[in-house]
Length: 610
Image (tube, rainbow, N blue to C red; front, side, top):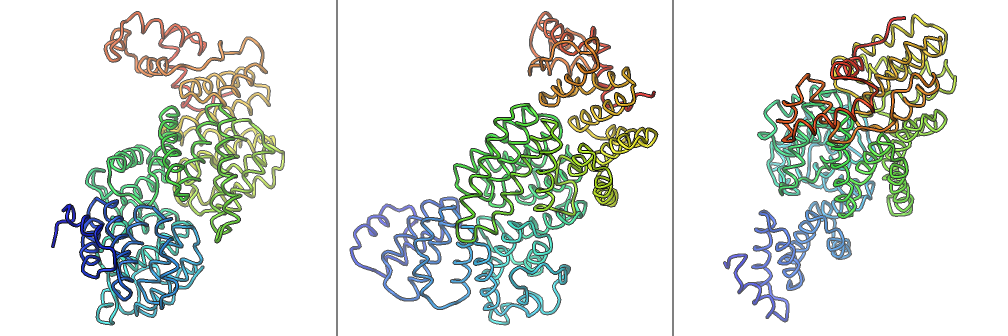
């Protein structure tokens, strides 16, 4: 047989004016070899040509299926769809139903896809317990080891191990699109029980199944189990899909350093060419940076994530990317850009609603838009807008895992802001209980902050103090600058309400230092406004935010490095360091390095005693 790259193969195909089984078979073999390698584009070309030169019969149908799969692996849905009418006229059989289901899932027609794939599963003579899974089922039975006949015995039943693995992975992908933890766990276990190692979408079905299982566990609040499933090997030693899943679980369970390491390497490996068809690690990496207060880095990652999602036309990644972009823009005070990202989500959602199967996909898009609206309302300090957005987000994207949202119990926060204290208490009790059960420290910190505001609004000053102290204690064990700054704002407001002007000023200055250092201009403005309300003597100097260079110098000065040591690290002159420090002091309202360090340390130290 000729090499797939041999020029004679292309010449032979070009010379064939009529269908030729011989030439079609050679092109099919070449295309399949290339599809299993890295040259997917050449595989698409050779498989398309093999179909064109195929006479009617089983060989042609087999080549149509191979060409469709190559196109879908390349995310070229249009070319794959061109073959759909021919397959739809064919008799139902597992591979035909699998391919039409794969196409429907790629187009977002999840219900159609699930029906086709379930039929493929049944036709493969899978065990009765597994094939009993039906569209829309979310029952929790059967999520451990599959009962009954092990899937590895399909061959003895006349089934197809490789195809069964691919069908189960596609059903897992549907569960992933729906964020259904029970279905993710079910179909992941179906693959893992078989031990089959077929390649699907350029990756082992076992790796994809482990990804789905880890995400399902994390969604169900079992983030530690998700990390344990993947293992604790260094990021470079972990398969790419599993690396993304571990990073996601670590993000949701407050291991931000571990999440950053996993997701940064996953993004780098994906950009270097490793196959990744299960999500966009750049969006998760941007959210990790957001939570860490590294807003400038978050903006860089999320801009690229949005560009990739929009250019690819692959809508699964788009809402998550634009939602995270909205979070970052809102925190930095660029509210028009944040609202523009929300507008992209809303506009696309309105188009999707009129497409086949669009209503089912609409849920995720509306949830993403609600997340952006929450970020904008928080940045504006608008409790009415926050209530609307938070209620929508809670209704659409309710989850048992509180670590998924970076904003905390925003519905309770909005209700406190509007004076609906009993409603706020009821919502907060439910949230706080789940956060405590799972040990989510960031969620507990946010809950304690809102609890403090609730107690203060009720006039329970001792309860407020205890709640805020609990929040500060949690904050000292984590690196959550934005949440720490918002905690300082909330406690300052409680102190100002009781007339403790001096205490409120101290916490507002601490909040201001955090927001200036991170570039969170929206919250910096809130701190400045609150300081101005306390009187002109309390304003911390210029309302300007630190530049990137000033932020770097401030961080090094905070560590008590000398001007010369800072200059050596940054490869600049000591005079340049002195110039930056003078601007830092003026902007933050401090006079020397010791005051700068104390201001930043006080931001996490805890509430001022009355």
